[in-house]
Image (cartoon, rainbow, N blue to C red; front, side):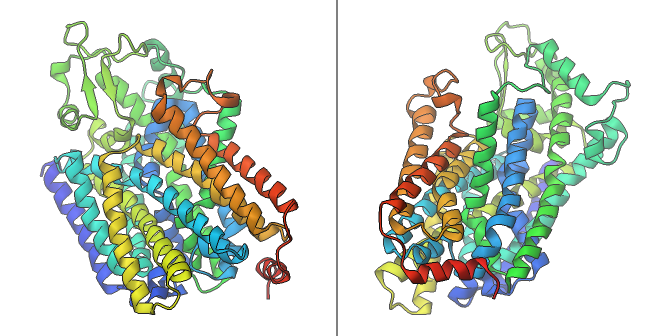
Length: 554
């Protein structure tokens, strides 16, 4: 069978599984819609957390970034992995002990202010929509190639699927759907990695194959460095970014992970604080399987790609090249008219433009793996994108229904009315997310990196100070969140969208790129909130008691 038929079969079966789980696990109350009733087992929650956290950026785009950026792409690997450790150890158990539905719930109660709650709601929605744009683009990329439809049509198909199980099932349905999605995405990621590792290095363990030798006896990374230098690209294993920028990007991704509301809320779905810690440990192990494999896939794909296209006749390109060309994600411009592909580091002479988001998806085709493996990777990419998109949409609907309508506008509404508002909000969020997927502000991992930066600059300081500092008050938290979010958003928008021609190291403040500016925004948030707290009244005594209750066991 050809790739398209295999894709219809495998993707169709996985979609049927997700929808079936959503129907069986349909939420019947706000408690089930928001936190799955708080009765999810640690292992199931660990798998759901891993799927929620490993988005399209992790599955589709991260290996592509490392493949094209080499050493510099490792900042995404370090930042996201380190960030999860920070979240699991520093924040999650305390927030679980607090026992409310959402991050704005925590901030509103801890800072005894409906204004603080409202600012947190705005931050949650802003960050979530920025993040979900990357997920919907990932869905469009997968559908555009493997179902051979337009990218925009692919986004619309993804919208329908997410709408069904997010709006119907809520957190209860999403949790068990994400368990299934984790199984699909990790199997889809590892199978081709093992295949290609055996073919290239003879080692069935990709992590070891990454440091192994090829059939000609040369080390894989030495071979890749040689190919890069021969074609005029920067060395694959040497950093091009400054140490300062690498530090700031890594830190922004770390603390941004710890401030992402859709990940934090997962720790509210287990019965106890102990279970929150256990599920965090499970999730870390399950995440590490993919993250330790990504650098190997990057090196395998880059080596095979260069060997397939560099200085080859365009007319002799394999079928996969033409299929990806039809999507617009590969573009060939025969500048010298010789019919050969000049894939070189010099942008003036280079004739091939490859979207880095396709590397993981095209990797099995480049390596000539069986068609069912190629279709499996498509299903895995969709599982990764849809699992995170659903979690983000739930955060948006919860922020609107629970934190804004229930807590501020109409506190007298019934449980059923609140559930209806949550579902309507989720539906509206799907439409907005679809728009961003059709009109994305960048490639998947870039957009996600911005979301992490915004989360770092807004949520993280308020959460940390709320747990560990009794002196932090509402005036400080509100001021810090507003200043941190506005500063970071302004910097990113200015260099990426207003004046992209100025987006160079020479023009960046302190040499910090837009991807890393969230760290500086976080530091500004901390500074502003501390200074304002020192010059405004102390929090009430009951807040100090609340902080003690969060930090100490019963």
